[in-house]
Amino acid sequence: MPMGYVLPHLLAMLGFALALFLVARMVREDRHPGSKMAWIAVMLLVPYLGVPLYLMFGGRKIRRMASRKTGLPPARTEPCPREGRRPTPVERILVSGGGAPARSGHQVRLVGSGTEAWEALLDQIDRAEHSILVTTFILGRDPIGRAFVDRLAARAREGVQVNLLLDALGCFRTSRRFVQPLRDAGGHVGRFMPVLPFHPRGNATLRNHRKLMIFDGRRAFTGGMNIGCEYLGPPTQDLWADAGILFEGPAVLDCYEVFASDWYFTTGEILPELPPGGCRLDALRVEKQGGGARLQAVASGPDVPGDPLYEAMLAAIVNATNRIWLVTPYFIPDEPLLRLLELKARMGTDVRLLVPARSNHLIADLARGNALRRLVASQVGVFAYGPRMLHTKLVVVDDNLAIAGSGNLDIRSFHLNYELSIFLSSAAEVELVARHIEDLLHDCTEIRSWRVGRVRGWAEDLAGLLSPLL
Image (tube, rainbow, N blue to C red; front, side, top):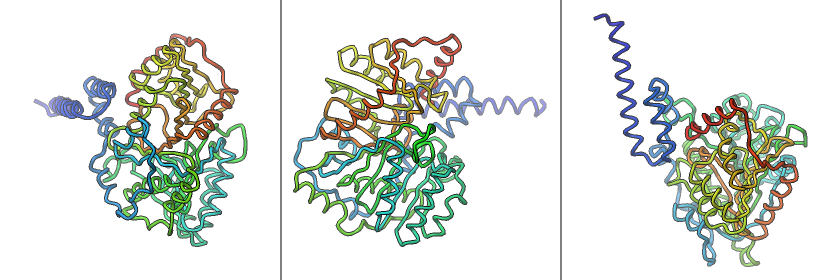
């Protein structure tokens, strides 16, 4: 029998056998049933496509690589002083999964625009005396990105320790030459997890989506803003609506540990100790003077047991009695979260969802269609933000919880990406976030019915079926 006839059949048999092996392994994995079914269908129906895609993008919890992010020196992992207040159900869930506890003793500032954030970050960079640590998903090859790198390089030349951690996929187009001035000035640059799967640390789908800047181990900034003209800079029509949190207090140490772990995983380098005193003494002083804001820094991702951001979100919604306000650029929920929002609205809770009228990702807009249609039918207040792209990521639940951070309300942020969120539980800070959402509502149009054409409807149905893979 000619080899040209046998070889295709042999390859087909091997491909199908590999698909069956991967399906058997996936059935035992700890992942959402919808994700399992979507991957199984793709691998069995189109094995030539499904098997390579799964090998490149299908992994969720990277136990082998996650284990390399442990073992930091114990002197730095000692917790800041805790208080005697009884934790809330959401706080207990986060701590039970190994997360940092909620603490008081913080000064918090909500930064509500890219212009305000740019000015604040430049001020913090100029004020730093010892160290500047930066994690970003995207570093734009544009004037803002250039100015940011040059500002960091200037401080590095003055003797300030500067570490810049870039996600390898988000900064795929950002060349080594672009950040070379920082290296030449004595700064350090790392690229988190190469995209190519055959690299020892490579993975195309598990991305570091965290946005974090730490100054002198005392002040931290986090939120949804990357470094680029869309996120930061002077007010223009192209500047997206976004928000972040600038704070100081004991949770800065928790953020420092997140950065130190990511940096060690990427470069193998252990960061030096925090400056003498650090956040511990600051926290003690603030608490003795009367408390300060209470917050909890929550890291989630493949290196963290369970899915803390997702679990805390479900717990917060379950316990809500008054309001649930959600702001996100990309809304691709799974069935439990979507059904819970529907039920809460039908129970009389004030449920509002703010999304961009049109985001910068067409597939994400298509994938959200069925979910938005169901929410509108369940009397959820769905609002489309119209003037520009809405990239803000905020949540308010009742009067005792607000969440700000890097995570979107989608399957990728809940279950795949490395994310960082700040959970605020002091009444004043929760109200501050709520007022910012109310300001956004002034530029929104409520969606009272969801009608689309036949072609658009088919596209939304298909994208919805594939949403567990997005």
